[in-house]
Length: 182
Image 1 (cartoon, helix red, strand yellow):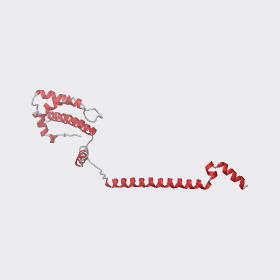
Image 2 (cartoon, rainbow, N blue to C red):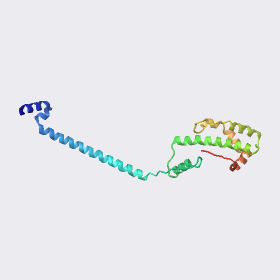
Image 3 (cartoon, rainbow, N blue to C red):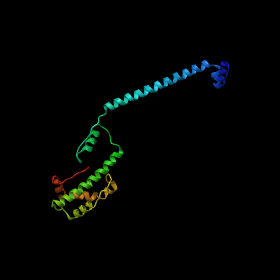
Image 4 (cartoon, one colour):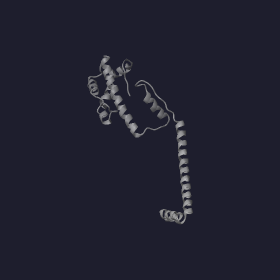
């Protein structure tokens, strides 16, 4: 019976294993040892990566800025970025430009409206037309900022209005109304 089992096992095992059963065990041990060394190496890499991550997280400072709208939360973050020498990428600069254009138009609209409500007269009748042009600007809902091509349509009017004594007087009295920007 044991002879039959030996014969069957030789038939079922690969050719190398049937000739040298001891050699296959050694190759298996070598393969296992190589896999174990590789696993240890990967484990050390992962441990080193986790240690670097832990150090980075320890240096990380998280703050929660609370405040009413228009209280300067975003401005504070931008100033911290500038103070710490982090440059703004080109996309951020273009976004700022569009926001600045929008703020200029909104601010001038507020000044033209306030000049009227405060009963301040125009320096010249021509500036009244410029004021109507600026008041006709409607910011697009959901849009962030004003495109340069759109802003260029209002540059002459904005320049003329800013030097108008009526707008300057309204600006001097800005504590009597809300002149905001984002």
